[in-house]
Image (cartoon, rainbow, N blue to C red; front, side, top):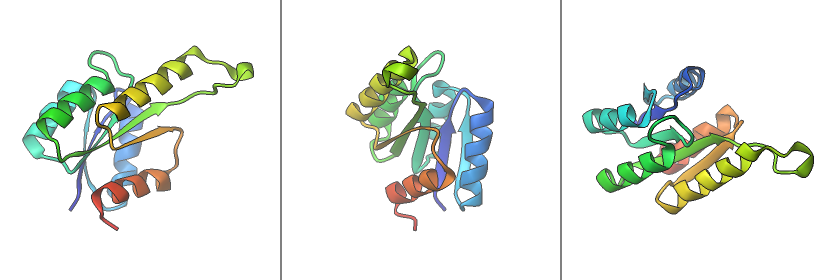
Length: 133
């Protein structure tokens, strides 16, 4: 069975992602911050980590770097709440989010997803990266 660790500071997101992935047949553990998630990875060895990029304390970019250094074969998906970059809906946080996702990709994330994404996109991403069709 494919083991997944979800790292997100938002409890509702953690619960939702765990539920979706568990129903799709994955073994899922959750962590509320990067340090907890990395420690969980050390204890349970996951095939794939899904981490939010913008979190208090250690952010997702730092988490990707640490995971990649210590667990080079673990697949990593970075998620974040995007935002509208059009002038009418300009949100400064959207630019920061885009920069974080680009940084995460540059240092080793296998895939990035911008919230909101649907269940099937998430399941497909995990299956694609773990070859578990």
